[in-house]
Image (cartoon, rainbow, N blue to C red):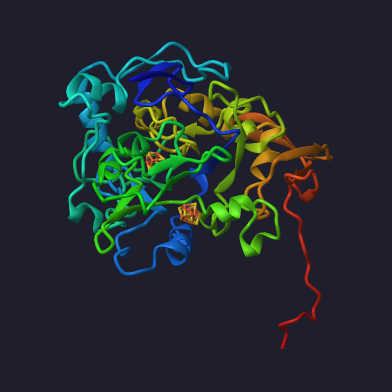
Length: 422
Ligand code: SF4
Ligand code: SF4
Ligand code: SF4
């Protein structure tokens, strides 16, 4: 296998192909603290792309309740277990979290799904450690919805006296997921037909159904299980990142890049999607005023999902602050403590950027902040805190202003007579 740079892991790793990176990479940030599992995202994707016969089990966008839920069932436990079997006791992170763009989470010492394949799979041509879920594992997308974890060390009992932040004794959270349009896609690596490709203009990973012969190698290899097989056409399908919208060629787009359907439909306003500029080695090029760059590389509140798997996923998550840290660290890597702390005590800029989420469906390429007056001074979560009513302004690809909004939500008083008054 080739040696490629994986900045999530803070080191090089094995991958079946030489590294090739797009100019700009499709990427997104989900703020888990705000997801209410309304499934509007799920249904927006379903009603747009996967409504036909043979697609009944296809949920390219899904929202599962962690820790017990999963679609397909237990997808993450199963792949983590396989990696543990390939490298017992070796799956750990070393080093320190830092401000380096090239390795902000320290270094992963264990084996990725590609590296585990080198030492455990036979024949040698096998490229990715994975598994093929059974049909019943795809049958219940909402399994264990809203099922919480009980008090630690006590079986089958929830906390009965109530609980308070920072960490709940009884807890669960909603994990919204789509294809991560990975920088090192496992689906692409495993396909013997070379039917899966990554677009050079935006890094979106697509599956050519003309080329596919339904071997399901991608379904087996994708650790996130975001490539799915369709029995009646006998080929596989996956999330297409709503590419006409991202290109600005969708009839609704009016020629400007728009966020995807699942982003635009998000009721909880947890989703922000855009395009990240890349350096030649696949790390994010400095782009200080891009909101995604800010959240991932400046504030460092947004972390990749299971970075240890090795695909360098392009979906990032602001972790839920009420969940025990060891669980979150297994899911998002060593940056959790820092991310939760910064999210709990946001500075002026972070508060502004968090207000960009879902104010518009057009992709934000740059933001600016105009400082406003002080509106609160006091204590917040036991610390001194000052709040300013700053204005954040979003700009599109062509540099034109998309919208502006303030930290303090504006108060609108309706007159006695309005459109639907009786
Ligand atoms: S999430 Fe899975 S299907 Fe999507 S690009 Fe990554 S490996 Fe491929
Ligand atoms: S990006 Fe588009 S195709 Fe992909 S999950 Fe979201 S709505 Fe579906
Ligand atoms: S639409 Fe948004 S808030 Fe609702 S389930 Fe999806 S990600 Fe969560």
